Image 1 (cartoon, helix red, strand yellow):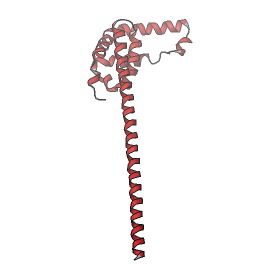
Image 2 (spheres, one colour):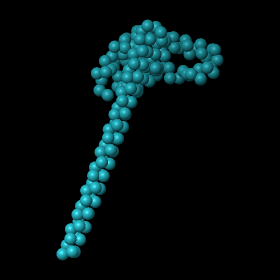
Image 3 (cartoon, rainbow, N blue to C red):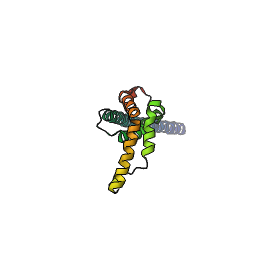
Image 4 (cartoon, rainbow, N blue to C red):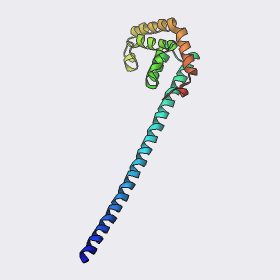
Length: 158
């Protein structure tokens, strides 16, 4: 009879031990889920913040183009990079292809520090090239800027 009681006690202790271990695992799993949820929410907030920044920047540059506060070619270059990060398929819209075109035709022009190291004559040649490009595509660039300024980005799928 003692052996039976000992076996029952050992079995009961084993069950209690397993129950404690199960509760421990459930709590740990719940903590992991909560941490994963927090990470997901933080990531979603970060993505939304980045998206908002890109949209705001595109609209600001578009307004700058329309209000003649930003050179047309420079605006196209900046908007192209922003659109690439926000929604690359927008370049395919007929009214926005001019942005891609201007960007492609200005890729060879040195920027930032490289521009500073150019001679005055080289700068003048590039500036003339930019002016000609801007004159040739001014109307299309302004139309693209107007479209982007008013574009319903918030309705786009993320």
